[in-house]
Image (tube, rainbow, N blue to C red; front, side):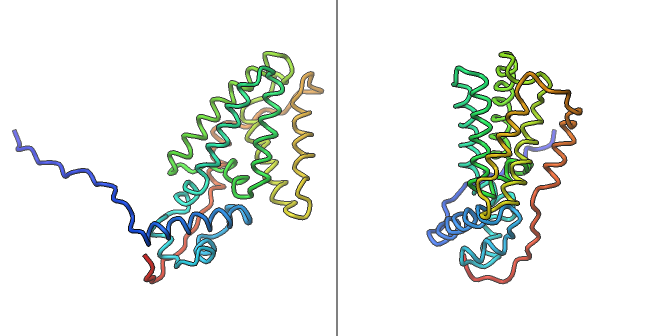
Length: 232
């Protein structure tokens, strides 16, 4: 019997030094502004410039873009989940369903970055994806309740909500500040198309795994190269 090798003690999360903590908060605040304005296509370098830190400092705190996105949008994903939970409390299933769509699309319109987050998956951002999955489970319940009343067309699929978010994100990003209320019209059209009785059958819904791959392919990649940086 081989001797037992003692396991090293687990690493201890030590608090950041005050200057490092300030840099981290500065980066997150800058990323909120940049992503809200430019969407997730904004580079890590542009976030570093907005924060007034070197790219190496940014990458020490957030080695991958998904890490930064998760830190910036955790509270918004929580609010997104709360929008679904609030809808489930509505005793009118159709009103709950339509109200949720309007609320979620309004969140996209208010923040270009979040418009992208709802249509992008980040496999390494575990907490963010867990919250998204919790919201998805609640959305399926919302859909089933609306169908049970006969108000939601029977061939509506949960993947259609993803497509609605994708369509709205496209409108939000295309119209920008030039026509900022355009999203309301397209969302109203989409909601009306969901209501029963349906005027005709829909084409088959996309395969759920294929739709996940589409969201994965749209994940932002940023290959910024760290440069020498004296900042903490």
